[in-house]
Image (cartoon, rainbow, N blue to C red; front, side, top):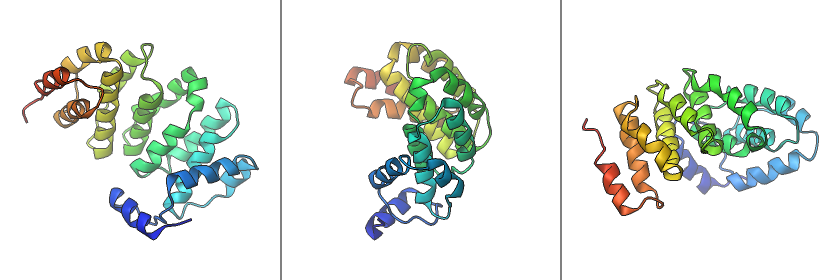
Length: 217
C-alpha cells in the first residue's frame, strides 16, 4: 500500500517523524473499517508501533470501534501517549465521533489534557474542542480553557490559533469579546487573527477589522 512519492511528500510535512511508509489516509481508513468488523480488541492488543502508519491505524480503529464510551475512553487514554506528531493527533481526533453521542463524558475526559504540559496531550484536547465543541453551549468554557494554556510548544500554539479562529468563524458574536480581552501570547494571538482572515467565510470588512487588531511585536 506504500507509495514512494507520497512518502517523500508526507515526510516533508512531518519533520522529525521517522519510519513513514507513505500510505494515504483514505487507504488507512478503509483498512481500519475492515479491522473493526473483526476482533479489533485483539488487534489493538497485538498491534506494533514501528511505523507512523501503524500508529495512525490504531487510532482510527479506536475511533471506528463499536463499543461503549467508557471502553473507548480507556483505549483513548492509552493511545494519546503514542501521539508524537500533529498528523496522528488530528486524524485521531477527527475519527473520535463518539464524542457527538457522548459530549458531556468526552468533555470531562479532555479537561486534564488541556491542563497538561505535554505538547501532544494539549493539542489532543484542543483539537477535540475544535472538532466537537464549537457550539453555543460550550463556546465560553472552551475559549476560557484555551486561554489558560501556557506552552511554548509550536504545535500547541498553532492548534490553539486554529481552534479559536474556527470558533470565531462559526460563532463570531461569542468569540469577538474574547479576542478583545484574552491572555494569549503574541504569536498565538496574531496567528489566530491571520487564520480568521484566511477563511473564505470571513467577509472583506471583517478581515480589515481583524487585521487592525494585530499586536505589534
